[in-house]
Amino acid sequence: MSPARRSVVAVERVGPYRLVRLRRGGLEPGIPGQFFMLRTPGRVLPRPFSLCLARPGELGFLVEPVGPGTRALCALAPGDEVDVLGPLGNGFRLDVERPLLVGGGIGVAPFPYLSERLGGPPAVLGFRSPHHAEAAALVPNAEVVLEPTYVTERLEPGFDVLACGPEPMLAAVRRLAPAAQLAWEAPMACGFGACYGCAVEVEGRLTRLCVEGPVLGGRGGRSAAAPAGRAAA
Amino acid sequence: MILNASGCLDALVAPAVARSLDAVVTKTVTPLPREGNAPVRIAETEAGMLNSIGLANPGIDRFLAETLPQLLELGPPVWVSVGGFSADEYARSCARLEGTGAAAIELNLSCPNVAAPGDEAAAIVAAARAATAKPLYAKLSPALPDVAAVATAAAEAGADGLSLVNTIRGLALDPATLRPRLATAVGGLSGPSLRPVALAAVYACFRATELPIVGMGGVETGRHALELIAAGASAVALGTVLFADPGAPGRIRSELAAEAAAHGFAAPQGARGAAHRSGSALVAAEANAGREASRRLRLKV
Image (tube, rainbow over all chains, first blue to last red; front, side, top):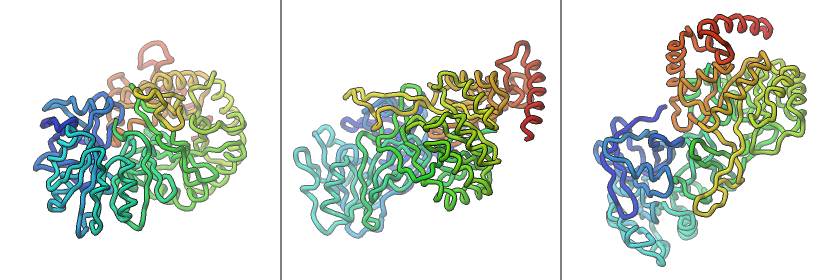
């Protein structure tokens, strides 16, 4: 179990985000919702990112430059190298009858790959500005809502909801769709159960998100509360 | 010999990593279950990381019934890290490890994220010594005013070895809000920042005692491991580096062998204490061989 060194194919602007495209080599893309730990040279710790795109020969990650680690990733140039470990954790269950993808902000990151695997289901994506909403172009069949409208105002009954986004959005989605599969985030140092840093509350007890998640819910009434703060600064 | 630092590996979740080590050190186990501290628990710093996990563990009952038997099946020797809030608590946990397959006990006398034990380190070692015949390692904080004096007291109280070092307290603030990034505000600093601190503690304790020393603190390469050995470590443990590179044990083992050879040592152990000796590395190696022999006699290992 070692990280693989992979070179950068390209780093593309997607609104305020960057699509970091890496050579895949022999790495498996995994199940949508699973994540990879990415480390740029010079950083002590890697950062967790769900896979955004699984084009042939590539692994694509949508990154928001919000801290030193994510800014270093976004500043990479073609040919630069990144250490990649994954896929890790538990992804979305794909055996759903009427999928609806519900996401907000950088939480749309796993949806392009998830949409591909589910055959292009409908999606409702919320953003804080038209600039941020440029990321919706990566997701087929997406309805975009902008603040102050929230994605939960567009939820209709009868769908199998698969959601990813900020903690208040996930909590609101769960109130409307208790069986929804929710992808949570938490700060992580390792991604494979060693650091105990990514503790979240599940069914009233603190547990490691990387081991039990990051996708929770829709499995026997599990509930989760995400920690404050950004997972991947 | 390469181990993991306590709390830096869940051997049951990552058995391949565990099998790449010469011994597996458990996360600290306390008499009662502990859920650990509230999130946020970790933060990267410029040259290290802070953690405030708070000794999350299932408690000694469940550890003995469920965790330890599975750990022992992995293969490598298992060192059990024991924590508590009084000498009596440590002693009772040590007594319960008698008759198990645990290869050694590491007394965590230095967690920066929970209240310090009410008793002095030497009193805890003495109580543990009376409770177990297993090899006892005292894990000390580098923040002690005189770590060598505490190491000497631990040796006199019956410790068989030292684990140096635990993390030291640090604080990181969110640049936007100027509020602490960890929920507990202060956490334990590890990684490259800790390396010179660990070297100094190992250096001081090697001069003060004849105990074997498991050196740890910011080791990322074979050269870092060799430096700890030269300062006085007889084994090296990996912590933060495992988070970023779970393949580190194998890599560092081969780098260490190459670094030692480049310095004229047939094996890494030959470099032990080299930082304390004048003259060539070869002279140091020969002097060290004699020292090791007398130490083995004394400890009957």
